[in-house]
Image 1 (cartoon, each protein chain N blue to C red):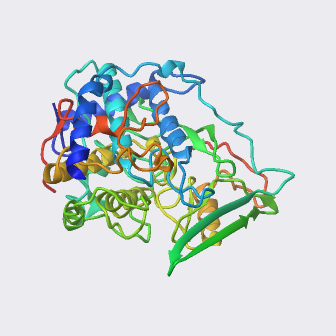
Image 2: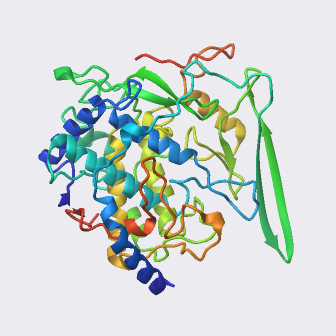
Length: 305
Length: 130
């Protein structure tokens, strides 16, 4: 079962767009859809701070970001969404497509991804494509969960999707050289296990200079991709499938089961060690170790960037 | 170290992999904690955001504790803010970048959440319709 490039596989593209709309329409609770559950889960994981020693009052990492668990937690989240999409599409062979943003790095603004048949364009709200507030053929994409910046808590809203591509001072998105330089790093992660901007280890390099930059390139200041509720924009999943592809390419070079920190590291690394439990809301017992080799569930059409 | 990791991970993944292939169950049982959409700034008390950094230098332990008390239009700001080892600020409100100064961070938050800071007198209008 293969995850394809969304711009070269029209079936994967159409299935993804249809599937996320079906999940958006399927009731979860309080007027929210099952798709919104993933927005909620991402926010909840982000809000769970994990300790930052040796000074006890500090806390930089959370249960999904800014630490070693960033890659396995998001792989787990993507697998969960993928399962839900297979269910609503009634297609056992469906796998998430990815956005190969390195292929668009030379001219990302004019990427076919922003076309009306794929993810639509930019705007506040987005005014073209299948994720408009009130789009063509009866398609509606309503943002229902947003963060209250004054409290950090979620609240229900009703508005259109916001994007502001290519206007942030970060400049353009990372190119093939940037990705391959990251894959060339041999150490998965290291003390202080944070989001050091230097990107000295593979996970740090992927999360900061590659992952964060693309989020902000799409969302700028107020676009949904730049906020803690970033899964509100379905581009989130295409982006993270590509991040996951980068991890899989690194594993191809270094080894499938290479991960740090080990369980022998101190308890203040809870949620981030090899066999710690990944944050989830439905009682599954899953650890980073479970996310290292998932080739039985999907592979990528290419690991070349 | 890598070898040890590989052995342990392989053993665990064999025993647990099946749990990741079953249909996501229990979503309908998850009851979200969602705040009042009209909730705004914290009222009546200050919110102090603190962080601490430490390092060892020539046998000495250096600890730097930093506290911020932030208000917007006179109202305490109670959003989540953290300080990393490099002294840069991070907020869950805008999680994909960090900030060299608290003033820059607050300007960014106000622009990122136009609905929450829609009025000039500090009253919040959290609901947006577009």
